[in-house]
Length: 126
Ligand SMILES: [Zn+2]
Ligand SMILES: [Zn+2]
Image (tube, rainbow, N blue to C red; front, side):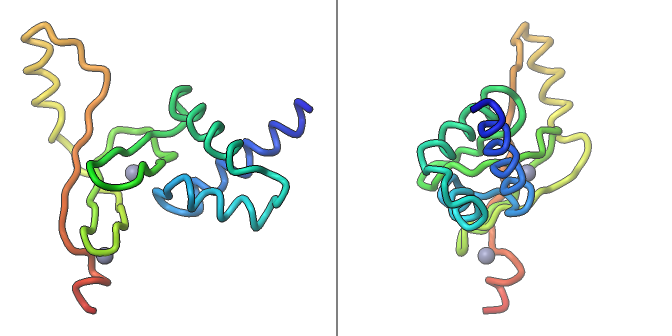
């Protein structure tokens, strides 16, 4: 039982890494192909567990499905408003100024999210 759960978690984590900011539905699609016995409910439960356990980020954005990110290091996201694809933006400096200001105001920051919107390369071509 324990071993089965570990296996399920492994494949779900693998889906997160392979799929690049997938939704839970996309994760389920991947898992289902590779391990058909894993239920949709399990996928959702494990993803929520990853998020609360700090192994993955939940990316919430108004009007779209929650996406998951295995990269828990501070980084930003660029979301294409046409196809919904989310890409990582690695840039330095942006939140740090903000974090310092918050600290100066006695606000304890437990997280932040920065998201850029626009049209991705593929959609621009189309
Ligand atoms: Zn796009
Ligand atoms: Zn990311």
